[in-house]
Length: 382
Length: 97
Image 1 (cartoon, rainbow over the protein chains, first blue to last red):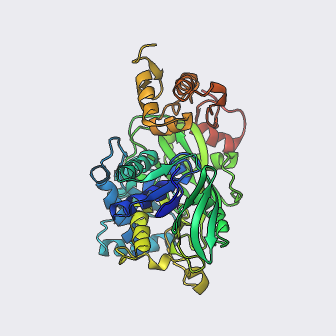
Image 2: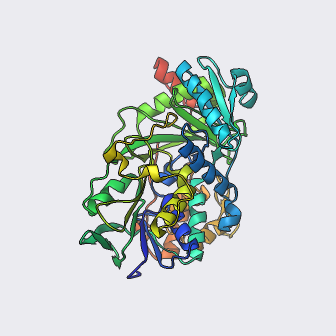
Image 3: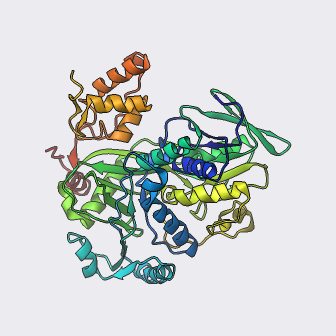
């Protein structure tokens, strides 16, 4: 294994490989990614892999708009020989409370002002997009055609392959066991396959980011929560958009391959890094989805699994360096939307490490917001 | 077996497809599954897994007993979403058709 590196990135999910790609593209030579299992084996490969630009803060609209446009051009930019399966069938977001409906009006006005052409729909208009939608108990919907979803394994592989072509060293099945700090500065990383000297470490460890924080003696204000998901058998295409609702607590998409992927979050999910499957999720998920999208009653489900949301208090990520340890950067705490932010993450962290002017509005996402109390008030987060 | 022998009937992969992926550097059943959907169909790997593990064993030199077949996830056999919802709401027997 390599002995020294300019930057060591911990975590081979889409965030880690996107950061590596951006650093190499900007001319950093010696970039290492360390992954304890295989690429996308953690949260990335377990997620719904959706991307929406329908957010309620300018910051999130701009970050996801950048990410979406990146994914639209990813095949050319990353020169991937596979297919990242980006299906831009839109996100149809359902409201079922008056308060949510009022928020949707504000969100659409904000989104439109930022060049995101979302629309507020009546239920009849929503049924033109999903004719079998059961609108009972719903009030309205918003829709944006350019939102969609991807194959998370191939999206990660596309970044990884591009990074490798530029010279990245990606070590899978290589677990970080300690981080070496001297005089408040990063000096290296210890792994189960040897040590690497470096002055810069990026924590992109997803659901395990707090464990990496502990290695430099910093208690990060994050915790990981199990979220469950299931997939059905392959059937003929009947659902174009991702259907989601904050108040009904669901998301459901039909991937290009034909299977439906759907999930929801439950109160009381374990926070002990467990990723086993539970029966309660299955009952609540099937009750809700067969009510909202009745034809799914006759579709068989094949498999359920779970992954970790790395949660912060305001459900927004933490980006950038920290005051306590020089050379230690964070790309953590995505709270369930790290996949869709990945292209933005890659650029933000690369610019932060190189001291370049920020192209994207992410300075508010620094760790210090939890000390100063300047939390981000995003009304439309799961 | 011929190279064009179908290994995964659910996701339509041949022996040659599997060998090509192994040659690309994927060294575990979990990785092959995620990148190619092998073992992700209605049979959940019951047909293909042994054949894939044998290929991995040949490629890596490790005996099959040292290779992970991945995690077996619920359910044991495919079941209609409506049946689980009905059972959750009303109880009674689950229809496995």
